[in-house]
Length: 288
Image (cartoon, rainbow, N blue to C red; front, side, top):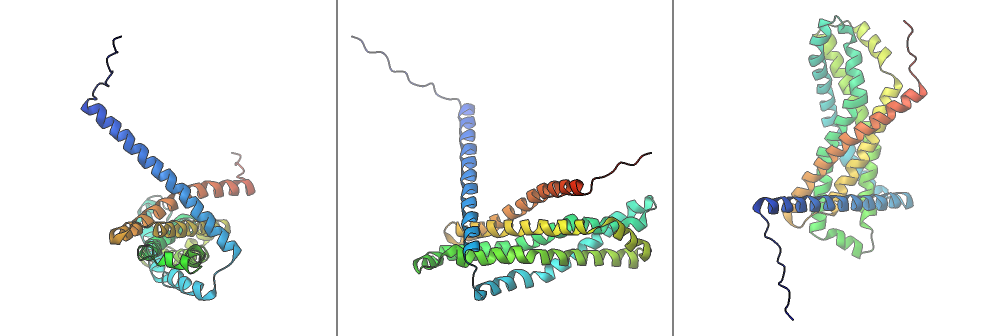
């Protein structure tokens, strides 16, 4: 009885092999990102569970509050002031063409309290504090200090992550208010003092167009921004690759991922808060 000849697969062409490798690499990246997202969700769940189970001691909270909140005030205030001035410079020419110079204050202050204030404060926090937290925790991971804490019976998430998380979500609203205030002052000083806009109409228009809901919208957004920065930065530090290169990569990834999450959260929170505003205060169309 004769045996059948063996079937060997036809060799792939170079283009087919390149396409196959590209799809395989893309699938591998997607799987890694999904796994990392799930791991981040578990990490966040453990952080929340420890936060509601037992609060950290005052000796642990105070240094983080000082490092994250107090030391970030100068850079946030300086950024907010110059952003207000830049808005005045960029908007004045267009408003002058329409003879609406006195409405400049409404545009500047609305943009600051709703969007630019919380986003810029969170960006400064991610750049200054998020990268530092990732680098610090990454160094502790590389030097096995986190493993030593677990060996001594101390939960690393409760001791290292929860204080930083609380400091971010509790102090970023203050930083946002500081950025809003300095931006309003910077825009007013440039508009009134340099551009010569009438101060009475400048402030009256600002008061008529900027309300309390606009202010609290920015503050509410900042709490979510601070939570995202703390969780992402601490997660990247806890899962740092070995060596100095791994620590540097963790710090870079902490800022990049935090900044992207800030923009995504800003979009969806803006849609949600605007929908809530329209539900509470519906816009009545005018009859012509």
